[in-house]
Length: 401
Image (cartoon, rainbow, N blue to C red; front, side):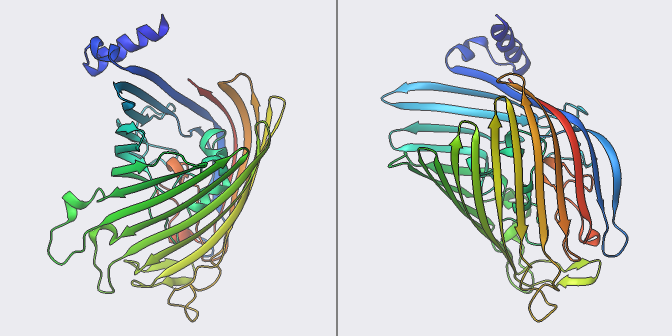
């Protein structure tokens, strides 16, 4: 009865005839993940750009979604997903950073949302979709269980950007699974084409992603490659900026609800468009090509209804900067770690306590950027905050529906 009432309410709110819902298999789902935390980022190299400790009622990754599918016959099926990030704590677009987090929350389809068709040949989908970002079973602690986790370093390093995360205007093809392997190829002309591409003196922006997964029993392997070519259609005097990334991870489920994983990633930003100046001066100049490698481990362990989470991720020094003979000034390493305990009260509800930390060397400014979780601004700490160490204590509750 309750589900029927929800569908009726959604039908009225969206102006969709109730008969339309009856023609397909529609489901409504979501998550509420809120709590109280204390965020700080202090100890910067210059003594300025610090973010002193503050208490927050946080919302991390809450969402509301709709899914539907329709059997078209002959083994073919049409489907869609419309998922929107919501801030239960504020009712607006602003995340914990206090700035607009419209890239993840507040507007319809702010999270992965697409329309697709699948059959024996695989599936094809169009819309807003994740490329390179997700790590699947290899790192799902922050994505699905608590507030944040150390693997955020893979996309929140700041000095060297990941090529792409959640991207608008994507077409994606997923192959059928054969011998435990499936392949996902994604392409996007990027969100900027219609706005900033003039056709005069600019190189067109395009994004390409490749994701390969292997599943066999308790073993899970995932490899990703992505290229963001001629980023933002910009052609600086030093050449078109292009970001690339490669990542491979492997994990093993050694007991029900328990898994150990290792991830390695390599990033390159070719011909960066602007200089990067940290607390100790210029780290890299416009036109430099920056490279970095990083690795990490992630562990999930269940004891009855209690889950224990831990992770450690570390980046090497950034190479290719103007200073220090081709190295980005040195002192550009970052180390991230997390520990968490979650008591599952039911299949859908749990309470948790966690600690997340990032230790930045003098010219590094990595932050917890996913979903605007940082206090420093939606995109994380600026270069002026280099050397500041991030600390977050949290107690929270998550309910999935």
